[in-house]
Image (tube, rainbow, N blue to C red):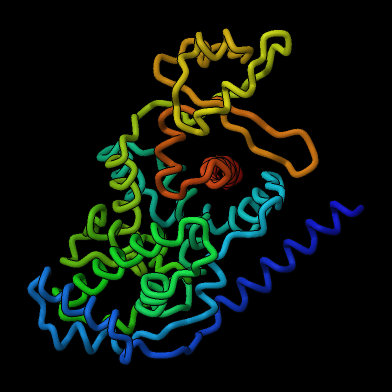
Length: 350
């Protein structure tokens, strides 16, 4: 009962934070911050932009304390729970929205799968997990979120310096994009981390992997589903997606030989051959036992209950390059699979 109570409270807290994060926030402008104005001048010089435009844009960005709070990790010792995490993303509402998205964009999904080698169900899973197919793309001004995390990243974070550097890079990409396009950098809305559009791309991902898949002359990840589909597929291709390779295999354990510590040491990085995994006590059957590439033993904890385990392939690892979490990758895979099954069922009954 205590565990169920903690889980319920966690879900209530998540819902409350999500609702608060959806509310437009106002904060202190960066106009008087010397470090921000110096950064603006450096960005203008590196990208050959009008320095007055960059300074003016960044001066109107606002520090949002709620953003800093939202990126602060949960207290150490908070148990991970795959089943609770899964329930947030695999539900009838999201599956039904995924079926509609697939039906409305079938030709584009097929085109992208043929061109990039990424299955439609993986693209559909990503867009569903990230934004419920465009229903929840975030309501923070992107420039506010990025500036807050670039100049006021919470020092209590264990990787504060590294993360602040990352967000300065994202802010630079964002300003350069709008400065070059001569568009308004105050208009785009996104998540509290500065992610944008249906696939929630960061600015650097938009620069590197964004695709004008509808041929409009611009990349629009908020309104153009072809651009969304092409960009997500291109992202995975760029990170080494192998067409035809499964994402993971089921496993069992031979307890007499199991060396779980050694198997989990590389985390989710595919490191072991199928034969090596079996020698360390993992039972692989059928196609899994014949897999030619490296594998990783992926552990998905379930709070106080026994964890789930799968053997992740290099394609599983590619999905974690979108979000560095095995829980996230499994949610994407399972949502895509559920939508695909629901779509097939709908076609049989129509």
